[in-house]
Image 1 (tube, rainbow, N blue to C red):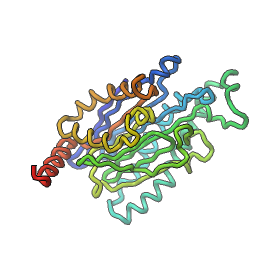
Image 2: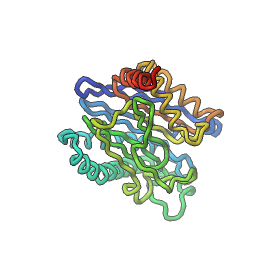
Image 3: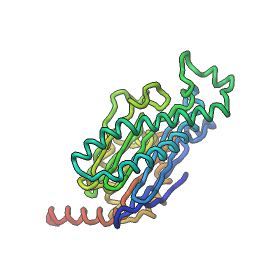
Image 4: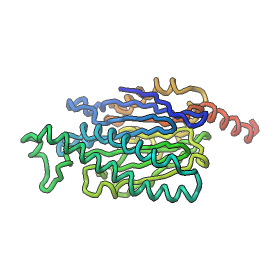
Length: 304
């Protein structure tokens, strides 16, 4: 289990990344490593957080390495993209242009860099006979490294989210309501997922661009599918959003940093999904103030 606390300044407000990860009980029983990975970068007015989930199947024998490489290249590509965003004003017209650029450039940068990192690793560590035997006919050389990826880039007044494969991204507002920052994908049916290792990986990314001047964000949650699959309710997002807002109204980021590893461990246990679970929260430094203010407004409007 790990947790991270990082700060990025934007005016008087900092943004922090808090993360927890845990090895799934099913992986523990089969003597498999945690194949999730999480990382973040904080520079000036930029914060990037990435979460990846290696597929774990025998055909994807190096997916733990693939997920670590995915997080590394996503943070690097996100930082480069954020630098290009820094000069763009937060206006509707600019947002449309940035969205088009993000959908075109960010996935291609990530996929291209990931494939290069995989090739470098493979050149130094050729496939064993057992790994070769697990491949299907026609598999690309990257297939054993297959991984999903979720990445968020907070650059000034912009929030750019990109995702390939399963897992969850959820925007939580100060009042405890929630929304998805990227579109869904009908190909994700609980048994199959899109992946960085597929030939058309760049085209399979879903990308969303949001203006933080008009979208009030208390927290952005990123999680591997071990988290969502551990929830008792099928439509768990509203309850989780309400809980996060309630917690934020009463607790600071240090409290969340203490709790997230335990939350991940609970989800990864036999009582949860049994799968590797990683949870990351991207939160503004004034999240407690935002949530408490929203709570007061709600109480006032309801006459309490």
